[in-house]
Length: 272
Image 1 (cartoon, one colour):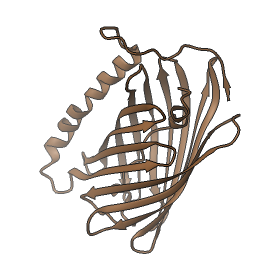
Image 2 (tube, helix red, strand yellow):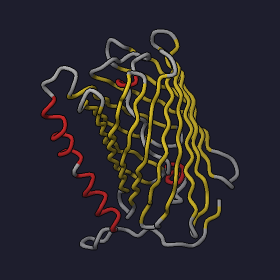
Image 3 (cartoon, one colour):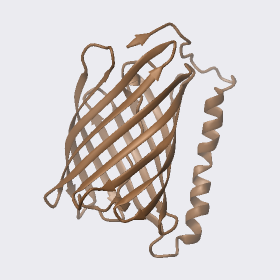
Image 4 (cartoon, helix red, strand yellow):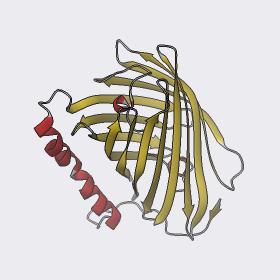
């Protein structure tokens, strides 16, 4: 990791103008509910369209990171869908509020892909992270699902440009269990900071299909290139699903895209 002096985050001043990125992207994110209603309303009466499923999850991590996340998935046409996420989480000393929007196409039962936009705003200090990119999910067989994502973003007020790649793999084990693994890389190359933030996790999820609940336990590690060692911690998560197939062998169409947090290793360490 190579960190050089650069602009530091400043406390918000009442009445002061917000960062330009925050102003533009937050206004765009305010359009999500209206777009949602406009696209899903006319088709809600059709049995295969409208609301597909909703999810609510809470998790805690041994490094002090905690989060709450709500997800809604709507079928706009027989081959197109919208997924929205509202989440709040603590990373290091920061409280973060985030909204994500995903517009995707599902040309066949075993695959879907599309674009997304994510905006995260830090509480108690000036800080906004905007991310956009492409993502996809494919069933390799009836028990195995792979996912991937590539994105670019900007973190203000430091003006940190970054690119990120993420990948995940899950495998159903028996009628209720799932083994999963994921990895992410986010590269920052600026005059004030030059590093690659990485995160990896492996774990097991147990579905209680009749109730819609799923309990997840995993071991994860995060680190920064050029920094000594890595932080390893355990994570426990509880998820509730309503609608669609809720078992570990559910189809791609009944699965949500993963949370978008490529800069979390920087937030946890207080670097951004």
